Image 1: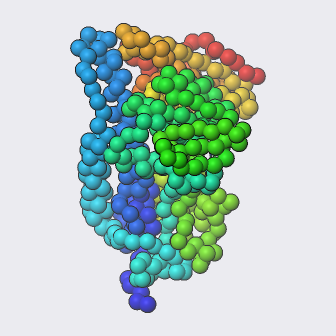
Image 2: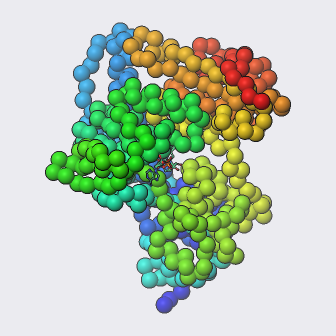
Image 3: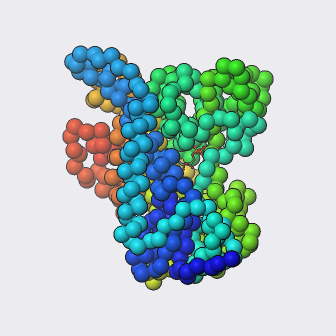
Length: 453
Ligand code: NDP
């Protein structure tokens, strides 16, 4: 077989992480080949964060119509046309994909389309052609896992929901993580009858408990039916839709089903065995703090390594790899203090330690604030904004900030700077409030609500 060209780096996967790593490596003069079997942009741009947030905007407009009429506007009868939304979304994603292609071209990263597989640790094959390289970076991301129960492969994934030509009348959502909660909230806002079925007693494992309780209240306020502590047995297609059989012998029915039971690393058909690349029990590629695999010249970043599965983290891992290997600047990504948000309605966002994590480490003071957002004051909405600061009593440092309420992701992103810089509660107290805002409550919390230790 013909071997072509020698590269300094071959990156497999043109998602956010792979693109960032390739461009950064090329900026140091590396000759880079980027291989992608799908469109350019990866999960976040094409099937995740971006289209999801565009659908969230559509859903949130419903409550805006209610608020508008409470604030004196004449009511406007309105119908959501998902096919029109899909059309607008598709043209926006094509625009973004074009920008990515132009950026790669400008960076002089060579791009080819096709499925890559390893031949040996210096050779990658795509559609029968082999490419030689000094280093390989695997950035292939993840895809929905369908192994939780028999029949699950028949359910929609979030990819399908973001491509709909028409909306179902009812939907069962399986799972209670990011995707389940976001889609339950967004799709109920678009008028679909949603039931959320999950095995735990609270959704959003890993988030602060108070936010998890808030999420339940807000989902129920949007008409979402919750089935906690449910053990699923199998999914069957019926004449009218689907039946979900639970292990307690009950059955739930809906027109369609969204599988949101987690994602698995994309390692299939990469031929990792050919080089003896190590993966963990979940199929994630095992790496060290420099994203280095057990093979001398192979690295992996992003969701395929199943560390912190968020776009900005994959980008940071990709750039740290390129800085280390091509920029003569050894860099590691700090995976602590990574802020994240759930784009439900209202959204929630967090950075740092939760209340229960902090109290296990040492004496902790918890400051909270809860209030009715001013924008809802003329409406019948019972929605509350909730904020929490987790403070280490010994050092006075703020270890965590958590919020559920309008603009929570925007507010937490700004607070993340202070918390990353090591701000103390005193620093928060010294900060002048910006009035009238919700965010000002974070600098006006005087007495702890609870103390530990
Ligand atoms: P998550 O890991 O967040 O949630 C998976 C859910 O499925 C959990 O409720 C989990 O339950 C449940 N589950 C897993 N296995 C089983 C099983 N065998 N039987 C029953 N229930 C099961 O995954 P998502 O699919 O929601 O999201 C995937 C990734 O995408 C996340 O890691 C996240 O990082 C990223 N993402 C980020 C977003 C954001 O930043 N806003 C938005 C969307 C996705 P349990 O908790 O009990 O384990």
